[in-house]
Length: 87
Image (cartoon, rainbow, N blue to C red; front, side):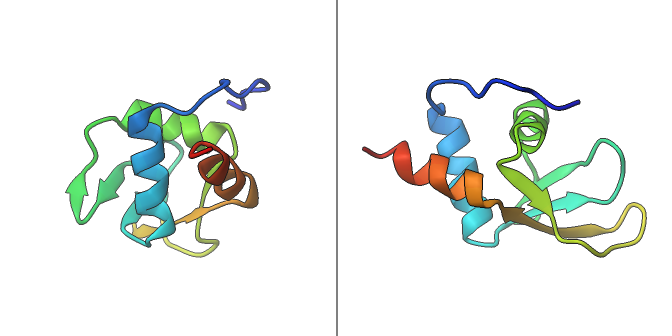
């Protein structure tokens, strides 16, 4: 599912999650609905994280086997939104 309209502002939780992605602390599992881990622990808001993925702010590293945890990457748009949220 891809969302067409981005929310006007990121929430505090969204910003913190994107900062963790930018720092390389987030992993996603390789499956249709990825499980989300931050610092090796399950993330408290997997639905919010999946929404950020659907908005194109986060993506998975391109390689991995089904079920494997792989590093989450901040997209160019994700970096732009994160940077602009502090203005």
